Length: 333
Ligand code: SAM
Ligand code: DTB
Ligand code: SF4
Image 1 (cartoon, protein in one colour):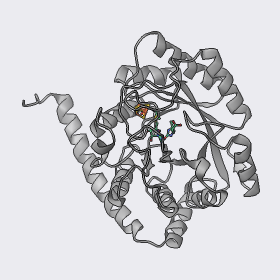
Image 2 (cartoon, rainbow, N blue to C red):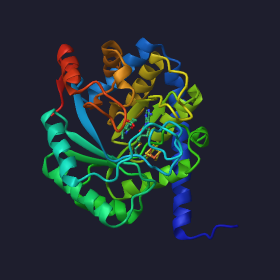
Image 3 (cartoon, protein in one colour):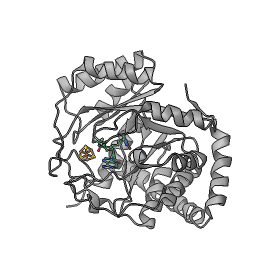
């Protein structure tokens, strides 16, 4: 079937062509950066980091799983997919008051961002979305950056979230365009980019990153960073997740990544997306203090803190405060 040439289709195509050109250029730069030794790469990353950020500060963010499990998507890494047989307690949308208690506690622990995640394929209309809008307003009124990650959305929903005061929308591209279908079959890479477009059109900051250790190769990692770097505007935060293998998922026995590959990804993200917060997210509870420190030196300047991400464990806020103190750094206010 031939797609009708509407003005929107033409505009989308022009935008995608532009994106492809800037992606090709970004990939060339990433290829060069990949050839550098770790000390050279970190030196470059430090130069960029110091130009745009305070190198002594780490932002703390707290996550809350406001609706857990029974997700219709089939992301191969995820504990929350209804298609995997994982040992997870399914929970419907939590009470607003309970979530706001968590937000209060997060603020007391030094977090400046509170990110609420729901295992939906796309945002449902009606009462549940009204609750989310209410939560966004309340978290903003607490002087924290409200962030949500709710799956796909349409333009109208993005506009409503903006109006409620949403700071950021998290929507990861996860891996390269080429590898996407190996990881997720229930949606496409293009679906992901379309949601990101709607978020950007509404004037909300995009938080988008990926996940390492899901069977991708180095070319996939480079390509993922090239796509992220060529988003326009660039994402204001880039979470870097390391697979937490979940029993019952297709990736339960995936080969662990080499730690230096994580450091490389952080440094290249820092150089290619200079103004963003590069955030260490999933898998941090398995990282030594030294590895986390190396990531901070390579340009990571934000972490997900607390006892839990969405469904997997973290070491706890006090451990994070201890590390920041030990390093003579401070938690960003
Ligand atoms: N359902 C929403 C979505 O898919 O956009 C938001 C939540 S989803 C859990 C957010 C991100 O967490 C995923 O895109 C993936 O990068 C990361 N993630 C999920 N499960 C993970 C795991 N087991 N290990 C590491 N990262 C994971
Ligand atoms: C992101 O990139 N990492 C966070 C946040 N965005 C929503 C989520 C990590 C989830 C890790 C797996 C879990 O706890 O279920
Ligand atoms: Fe659902 Fe998000 Fe998990 Fe995919 S990553 S299964 S969309 S909760």
